[in-house]
Image 1 (tube, chains in turn brown, purple):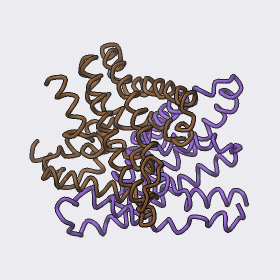
Image 2 (tube, one colour; image 1 turned 180 degrees about the horizontal axis):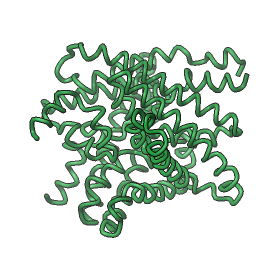
Image 3 (cartoon, helix red, strand yellow; image 1 turned 180 degrees about the vertical axis):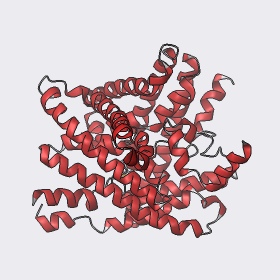
Amino acid sequence: MTKMQNFLKGLIRENPVLVLILGTCPTLATTTSILNALGMGVAATVVLVCSNMAISALRRVIPDKVRIPCYIVLIAGFVTAVELLLHAFVPSLYNSLGIYLALIVVNCIILGRAEMYASKNGVINSAVDGLGMGCGFILALFAMSFIREVFGAGSFCGIEIPGLSKYCIPILAKTPGGFLVFGCLITAVNALSHGKAIKKKDFGCAGCPSAATCGKLSCTDEEKTGEEAAK
Amino acid sequence: MRFLMIIMTSVLVNNYVLSRFLGICPFLGVSKKLNQATGMGVAVTFVMLLATSVTWPIQRFLLDRFNLGYLQTIVFILVIAALVQFVEIVLKKYLPALHASLGIYLPLITTNCAVLGVTINNIRDGYNFAEAMVSSLGCGVGFLFAMVLFSGVRSRLEDADPPKAFRGLPITLIAAAITSLSLFGFSGVATGLFGG
């Protein structure tokens, strides 16, 4: 796989939010305005690229048994750095993202990519993978926040769109609208890809560090019988 | 009265799952069956209480005292991860019956943003120790409440026959939107009842 393909796969084919269904919490919570969503996306991307590189560089040093705590500490370090930088240089964004900034630590995209990709591949490839996944995350956040801000609040990046603000649908910018828009976006991806998009089971779950336990609980019966048949 | 208001706010008005979007992964992943949803909810409540009882003193007596506030994120996530491991080992050794029913949910909780969220929020809201514990209890109960509520909705979804593209996660999310709409009615209740 060339570097370009490696980068592009994160954008659409394996989009972390819309196809792999990772990182749902920040996707729903920070997309009420476009600027917040972009800020969140960029912050998470920076952390993702840095942590992917660090984990990939240390992959032969970290013992397999305690790898998850090691990854979490590394990621938490980068998150703290990003938090301090934002607090110093972009305080308005720091305030509006609030607690969700610290919660990048438990964002499953980052831990998922560490476990799935960075722990098995070289430093440069991992950086490219992180950048691609990060851009995919930004893209998905932008799509969500665009719909929610333009139709929910009648504005674009905080600037009111004349004529539209009278007819906006405020519920889209509120909590229920988050679930609704997210559901509709995934439906659109499903419909456009004719179900060819990689199934959640194949990717998102395997990437999650708790897949082994979670799989037992959330796999549907068909998946289970399929697995048994395969055995 | 203040405790009642904190509980009311965190269960109904600022419900962690349905209005603050924390802990969405277990909410969507483990809410298919009522007993699993309840188990997960109880386990999360338990860990939230435990985590707050450890992180609050750490913040107050260690981080604030030595001006180490910037280490909050790292310290809290480590404490939670260690705590969950510890609880699992203790339960396995001394309370195997409880471990059998809650054990499988515990590893999932380490990376649950609701737990980290509640510990950080308690500090940011400036609660004292008792208020922080009450608020954790409220958030946990709110989580349990959302899980139980949604598992009921999902059991109906199983029999539904949506268009092909909506099958699976999308229809679940849209159901979640309607469920969260039902909690929307409570906004303003706490301030209305207790006068801010």
